[in-house]
Structure formats: C-alpha cells, structure tokens
Figure (tube, rainbow, N blue to C red):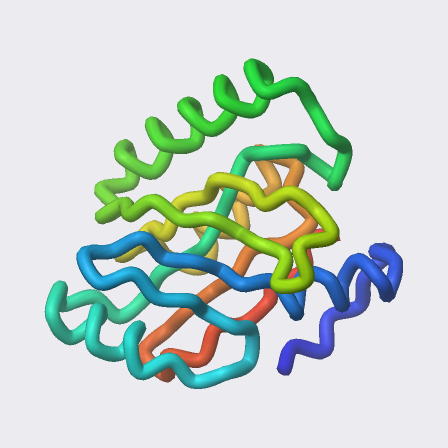
Length: 143
C-alpha cells in the first residue's frame, strides 16, 4: 500500500481504492488496488509486458465536465499513449456500489511509471493506478 502524502480528502482516496478498474481485454477482468491479480499476470505473460497504467482523462481533479469535453481529452490521451508506443486496452473505472457514474479509461501496457505520472499530471488527474511485474495494482496519488 502506498503511503503518499496527499491533499486529497480521505473519502476520495477511499473511493479510488474501492473502485473496480475494469480491463476490457479479450478476457475482461477487474483490478483492485493492493490485490494480486492472476488475470494481470496472465496478460503480462501472454503479451510480454512488465508494466501498465490504468488512466483516464475524464473529469480532471474530480470536477465533472461535459461529455464532449471529456471525450476530446480522452482522444488526446489516446494519442499521447500511442506516441509512447503503448499497447492500449479500453478500461472502465466503476464504483462497486453504483453511487457514482464510472469513467471510460485506458489500460496502457509498456508505459514507464514516469511517463504514466506525467500523463496523469498533464490531464490533471488526482491519481493513476500503476501495475508492475508484481501484478499488485498500486494507487499513485498525484495531488
């Protein structure tokens, strides 16, 4: 578990930790922060990757924006990930309790942690989810 100092409210950080990070691969699966994922391990093995990031450009700093604004930012994020030669899968961040609307996301394989943080900051996200060869998704707080 990451022990990041943050200016984010505890309730928001808790919500991020509880989120279902859905990876829409050939065989879809859900990532949970701080929980080993055998499905991620299998994906890494099958595609020969050792790192990935779950990221979105939707609703920067947890401020709800219009669909068109979010879709435009998400398109720009996709281009940035493509420019970094990432293998990109669609994703979706969903509230397991259904209390808030989920967000379309990307699961970018082959990205470095530095590049993932830089993109998270570029798109003014509060956090990203980082995955390395240990296959235990980690919440990386950016604020």
